[in-house]
Image 1: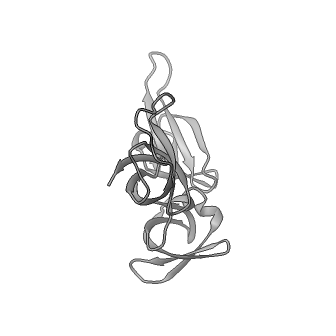
Image 2: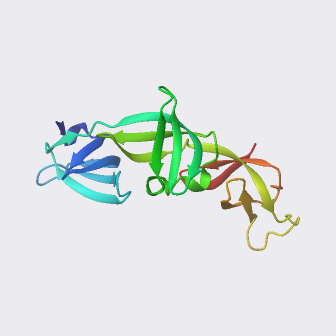
Length: 185
């Protein structure tokens, strides 16, 4: 059992039959009354983020999740096929579990798969990935009246905003948490 004074970011808990990961936490000791902990928790199944407050010394069951490295092989319909990097077994994941990361996935990319009680509940990309620009309008020098960014299509089909100096064929680094341009590689 885990008490609220043992909370830390990234800790997984089972609360009311659901699996949550603590995104943020803040212990509060008011001048009057008992201490409590404010948390921001993400439900790993539904991806919803909740703000919850717990009394000090409340106890919860820790959820033991397993993280596996897997290589993306191919897509067939609404199923995505991966290879476990340790055992070389094939792992099949439904499109619903991957909805957040599909726009940035390409063949042979390595991702992390989170497993809880034998079920795949989440898949995560590396924090930064490199993709090639396949289409972008040429940037006109001095065209900064609106912003210094232009839309660009990447090799996976996703479109993001990039600086004016980025051209077709350039490889760029993207932050997968925000989906934003970081730098040209």
